[in-house]
Length: 152
Image (cartoon, rainbow, N blue to C red; front, side, top):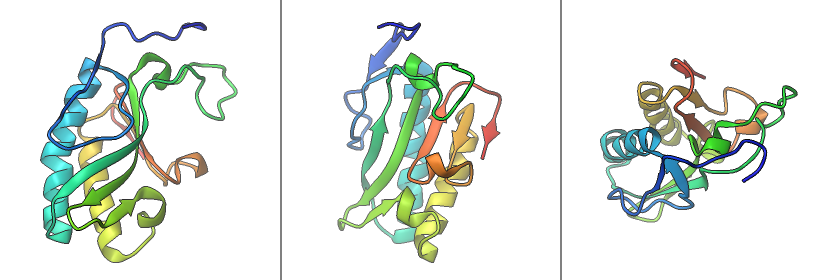
């Protein structure tokens, strides 16, 4: 791994109780908070808003040796340290798929579900970025353990 990227102190999540796609190396604090967020926020929100269980969480992944997207500073992204995860969609027991891209400004239930879990994420992660942040985040939530409660 060049350019200062590293995955030291990271783990690979085998099972958090809900199948999750594209999980690679991930730091222990991020893994702990992500698993708790799925269990205590995502799953209850699925039951509350849709009356159904969330059976899969889809992500764009965790570790990626790269700079901050669109950043001119040349600073490494938290993905370069396995300290970030990008969440793209959720699948319910009946096969309904709620994507961040289509649901953030979609129908009332999708908006309610995504905003509930976004609010919960803001209490668990150091940085939370949503489609409200910029166009680069139109299709996913970005969570990482850096920052001091930056939520947008």
